[in-house]
Image 1 (spheres, rainbow, N blue to C red):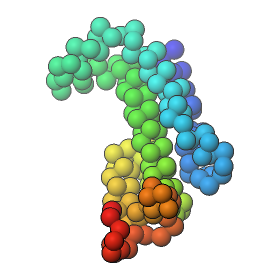
Image 2: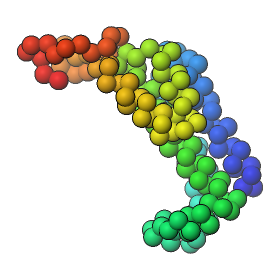
Image 3: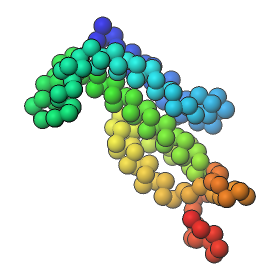
Length: 162
């Protein structure tokens, strides 16, 4: 069962990644990816893997040692649970990157490689996005709230606060 859950983990996340990367401007992508619940299937897999082993997992995560974490992750159940943990968080971060980039009007062709990097090496994708986003600030709408801007931020405008 562990092998099946391991394989299923990315399979349930992949359609959301595909929407964000391949169809970033499609109205259904915004509807679907707009919900943080897209990570729920992965989180359920994680729960199925971790909850039965909570007696072994809890001591390792509450007082972690390199050896304890290595031993936990060295088992099939531990590796599958860690995979679900990574896929769930990477998808949540990827969703945030996708939404943030749309709010800032960042080009989809720029964001797609960042999302791919996030799938493969999560924290590095996040770091690249955080670096890139500094060039794109959301514009203000008439109410003073933020709205999407299709152009990079320029110098401060007198009388306008950031």
